[in-house]
Image 1 (cartoon, rainbow, N blue to C red):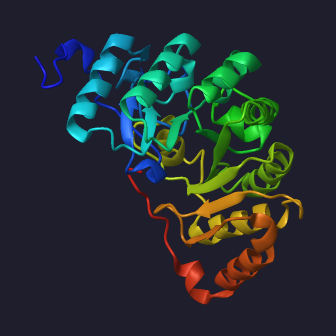
Image 2 (cartoon, rainbow, N blue to C red; image 1 turned 180 degrees about the vertical axis):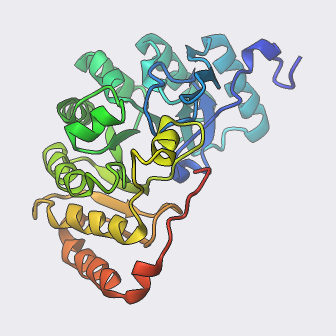
Length: 310
């Protein structure tokens, strides 16, 4: 038996990821694996090169989730301020289960200030407006969703399994339920061939979506992905740092002047650090910063980081 009092068969959480911003949150697994598992750039739960399952998809049993929560209550007492519902497909869990988990969190940790999770756009779209409203009323405050790119071509090329329209619809739907949304953009996802399309189409989607927050990440290709093969065989050319910064500039320049949202360029995969509490107020300042960086001769000498972990 495990220290939590759990059967080892229930501890499949060998893969437990969370956004960097949730580093100090209590992390509770709701789902394991990924029900989609086909994205060419993602090798977290499924090795798309070898067809090897790294972690099989399932919704974790409610009694196991409760045991974990009760264990952490014994360890930390009531003093937990943030909780992250882990799993790449946490919102794919039945609404009834999610509500029971949210209620249990509030019961055990009455001082909790924020509860968050990842959310796939299709998981949001599969729930009714009423279900999403209930989930928010029971405590879900913010979700993190991978937009990746606003380009239909690039989403299809990367086997994302969705469309720009679905991304926009899902974001609007969950915000209408009262839940904040933070969307991720993967710079360089179109490779050199589609770098301009990636930037301009992503800006269009952001203008339509009007998310609470969006965050930049730079593409780094993992050996467990099909994109690794594409790159090695010359079918995909990595965008170098100068091009990454140019994509970023194009996205910011093409945002509507009245778009109000937080923007963070704070990940270690990126080549510049900056953030904005309101892009409407900071747009010109960020454009000036990026243009200055692109004019710096040292920028063209930067090499891609080739990170093997994020």
